[in-house]
Image 1 (cartoon, rainbow, N blue to C red):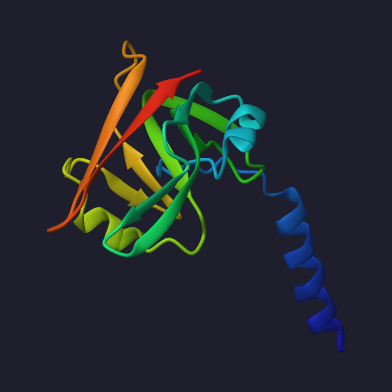
Image 2 (tube, rainbow, N blue to C red):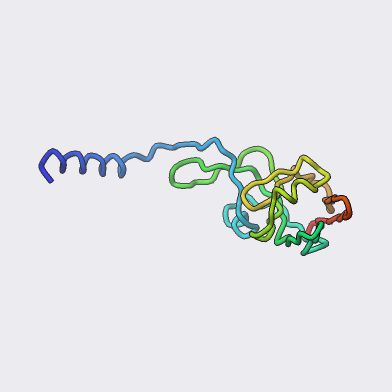
Length: 147
C-alpha cells in the first residue's frame, strides 16, 4: 500500500472511531420476547393465554407468550434505548406459524404483524383480553389473562 492509500485508510479509521454522532432511528422497535423487553426496561405487563395451542381449519399454532411494552427506539448508534409515548401489545407465536393465514381469520382487524409476532393496541385497564378467530367451520376464542 502506498503512502496515499495508508493516509486514506488511517483517515477512515479515525473518522469511524471519533464519530459518535447521535442518530435517532425514528422507527419504533419491538422486543423479541418478554425477557428482552424486561432487559431493555420497556416491559409493562405479561399475559397468560387460556389456550397454548390453537387449531383452526387444520392449521395449528402455539401461543408462546404475550406482553405489553412501552414504545421505544434506539437513541443513537450505541443502541441506547429511548422510550416513546405509547405502548403496544405482542403475542409471540411458534416460528413455524403462518402469520398471514392467522391474520385472515382474526375477527379484530386492528391486530397487525411485527416480526414473528401479532401486535395489538393494549387496553391497560383490562385484566382479560379476547381474541376471536373465525373460519367457515371453526370459531376459536382465546383469552389473554393479565398475570
